[in-house]
Image (cartoon, rainbow, N blue to C red; front, side, top):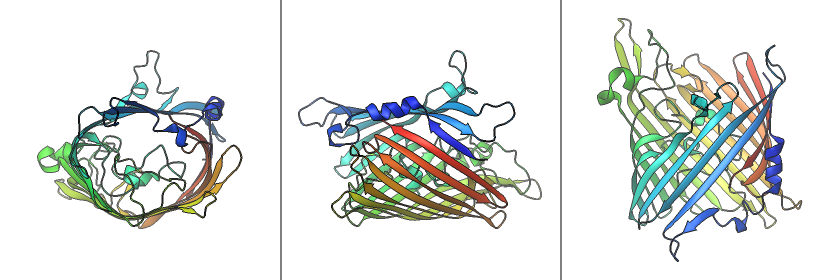
Amino acid sequence: MKKLTFLSILSILLVFNVQGQGNPNYDGGFKIKFDDEGQKYIRFLAWTQFQAVMDDAPAPTESLINMKLRRARFLAYGQLLDNFLVVTHFGLNSLDANNMSPTGQSAGAQLFMHDAWVQYSVHKNHVIGGGLHYWNGLSRLNAQSTLNMMTLDNYRPGWSTLGLSDQFARHLGFFMKGSFGKFQYQVSINEAITNTLDERDILSNETIYQGRKLLGSRDAGKTYGGYFVYNLLDTESNFLPYKTGTYNGGKKLLNIGAGFFLHPNGVVRLDNNLNIQSEDVQHFAIDVFYDHPLGENGAALTAYALAQHNDYGTDFNFGPYSTGMMYYGHVGYLIPGDIKGAKFQPYISYGNHDLDFNSLSKTNIGGGFNLFFNGHNAKITVGYQNETFMNSTDHQLTLQTMLYL
């Protein structure tokens, strides 16, 4: 199926009428300071995406164009006491005519909590915290920010735990993060979610992600994650967990990372005697992130590469999640422009996922460009995706505007 996605004309007009977002005049956005030193403050971020989706082969009773609210988010963080920080992030996703209700009571219309954690700085470079958090293990993709991706969206299998062990890529638990010079770390111990996206009935020789639900919290209730990065050039901030997709030449970065995610007894299956057998979920990854200006004219190169071993148990296969080796990479080149300060960034991406359950592979090839008017605060993206699996090929072309304050 081919899809062409357009954000509303209203959103496009809003992009062109926003001034100062994403440039030096932005100065941190909506930030209220409660002292002269700026150590006591609160900062607010808000963003909304509205889409009109055009399907060139709709069902006989469906309209050619259907609209939806893709994202509506609000994030606030701040501190009034030295060394303490609180973060709150909530919103909704994909509200459309089918999941709306007359009084706004449907599940699709409800705001839900994305993040809610508190943290304490035990040292200027080391922090402990707890709550519903995004300090994920494994890889940069598993903690990708949705505000500043270079590609149109994240590589979906890269969010390797979303909905299986956590709530929308957020775990409930304790974390510790910090740095030793150019070496940065983040580790966590968390509760595994009971009601996962995998609602399949347990059958013989089929692995399902319901370890905690069927075995209980004692044997399958905890997950463990970690991600470790060495900054060879500039040191990237780890103040918040949301990983930047591209800095548009604003930094000189070459980061090498490695991570893990473990969920003991996370998946289960029936043996030939119809007894429940459990298996551990074990993911390991290495990745490289490069972002660097080229010359003095504003050009920049951004590149990312990932090799990840996913082990969801024997022959596990559920939607974008499958046991097997995964490779992904993308490259983008920022071309400076002189049209009202706009900048143009074409990119290409490639993903390949070997699937143990049938010894085949799934391939995703993408490409497109970003047109930045005020950095990531106001941009237009056109992206193309071609996913091939067995004898099926899916094409998708998307036009998107991005605006956040």
